[in-house]
Image (tube, rainbow over all chains, first blue to last red; front, side):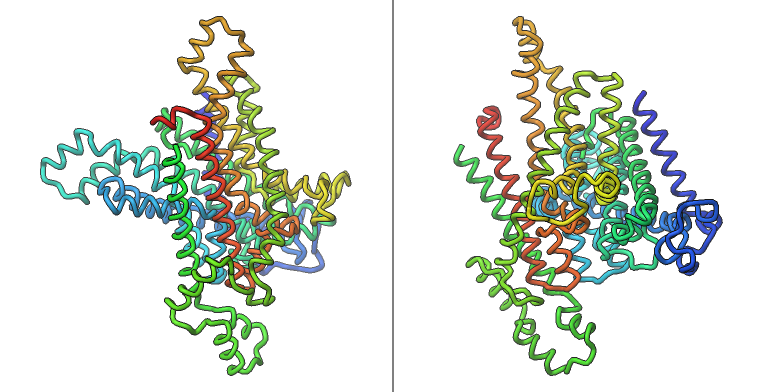
Length: 272
Length: 310
């Protein structure tokens, strides 16, 4: 029964984050950027400011609500890009084989050898900070797992009867790859993708924390933590709440992934 | 045996060459070079001076020439000179590698010492509250943002309780190492707990365990001699992968704790667009990963006879 609770808790957190992101303007009591008043700088959490205020007197609660939009949007977009790249490469490498397969495998090994955040940092150095650069930097660097899994899956499906039948019926390679095999290997890929959303959100936060991600004053959870160390003694809430939001969101995606794995893939093929 | 090791080494060499090429290409297409960022900071620099700096740094040569130069120097162990400080990259890197290496060793040590027993207990007591607690710890450890965890430990352990220094390297002593190592080790610890649980569960149902039991071995002997040894082989890859990616993983942690290692250097160099330094850092991080993983694969060959004779 444990997997059911994973799935339920994960889904609940996911739904909650989506709702917060969509209705942020209705929930947030203040504007996340323009409402700054130095008279209220570093106010402790209380009735007026639920999660306290930061060094510029901005309401942390409102900034976290709006931050959900950035995290969720980047998480989903980045993981969609990674999954597309990974599946495209893995599917074609597994099905076509030959030199292309060798090439894709070497590329995958290379990507695994360069940690995502490091590669993304390098790309951010090239592209400069900002959301678009962030999407490119993270969306093109973390596809190795989906590539490996789709390749491995294709190899086992390639010799199965339904693929042979499709080939006998004269369908082309593209049709067989995308219309026959892909729908059959979706399960493990969905699991990897779900967990990947969590890692993408975390990577965005890490880059923004380093000052190389979302450009301030946009409310990114990681960016909000960037200056928390200096204020730790006087205003620990600046560090506490954005990190908590990040933690719960990533936990939700990981639990959802775990739950989906147990549901769709009882033999655990999609282990990361 | 030697053939297998040789083939593995060759594979790693290919990845190294590919990585070097990729790193070079990435930074050759940089739209804003170091010089233009220099100009952005201090606007009244004479364009002629900028041009001269560009020529001196070799930024105007054609791409193939630059690549050939880069590779030639690399083979001689020369990674170039830092754009920003004019010091040789190799010298700066070797001055900093020790701090990073020490941090990585401490972190993986923590991960192994806590993670392995956690996974082991969870598997042996499968389905009990101990299993549930251990696995909840593991999934939390995997989901917690390391830099946030670091901030929390900083607040509670250093600022509130005053037990340990908040950040910095100090004189390189143990006390300064604890918090960064704990923070860096939390995710690998969680992953190890999960992997070792799965590994022990897999071994528990293996035929050789049944055989050992039917031979009348004591339960302790079965667990220690048969189960733990076989499960460890399965876990070794995870340890290797985690240790190998430590240098990369420490980028954020080193910044948070003002730890004078490769990760902090990389971030500084990225914000200054000090290209030779960034290239050097990434190369070192990739090399570290590949060396560790090649060593783990070779260790496998030595430990597990089944792989040798495959």
